[in-house]
Image 1 (cartoon, rainbow, N blue to C red):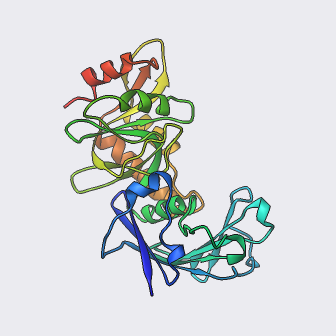
Image 2 (image 1 turned 90 degrees about the horizontal axis):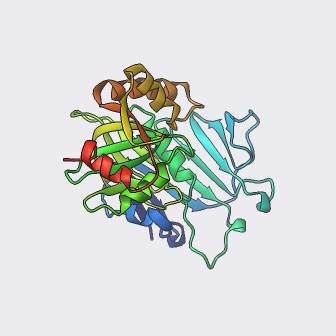
Image 3 (image 1 turned 30 degrees about the horizontal axis):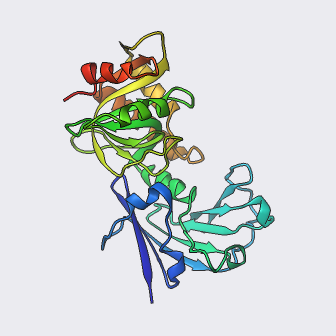
Length: 294
């Protein structure tokens, strides 16, 4: 009997199917609100138990500090995941076709308890999969807090760690009519009518996440300041700033080229400003009056 689990993130539907129900029924935390019941899927994956294959003879394309490695594999790409407490062999291997629209996930049963349901797409595999799928000309993930205003327009507050994304998200979260898409990771996609932003399950410390999305109304580059103020930014600087805070698969040249071009398009077509802010409720009043308004 085949079972399946479907997730929809930023308009991308991912289905994981398996003959073992324990492999396809478990999601946790914020990911639960991204579950959908859909007959169609943009990404179709098969999950199974099995001993992962040995490490390829060729060196990895990328090594994430011993947590996961990426290899070329028969025309596709293969991710191997490790945990120090489990020894040197990978406990999970995922292989994807070049367009990332299909693939297989293999889990080593020796490293999973039979009493605990298994999530084949457990983080960071879900994020890696979406980032690579989007890199095929579909969009990018950015380090940002995303907010929908009462009219459904999206406002993107971008910043590196420590810039105030989570602080701002917590302050805005108590405001009637606003929807916080995420306090840390937002997906930007192009549409015929212009860029859209979407929430993701990969939140920050505020644990705010929503599967909603909306047309991009403005980009704000966060920085702490003595007061709340908006200042213009050059289009080229805005494009560079977006790219510096994006998470494209930088181990793939074509993905980097797309991300750089897409950031330029967003900066050219969307209002971009620098937001100096003081981390208290006054910034909420300021934004409601000057930017996040109908």
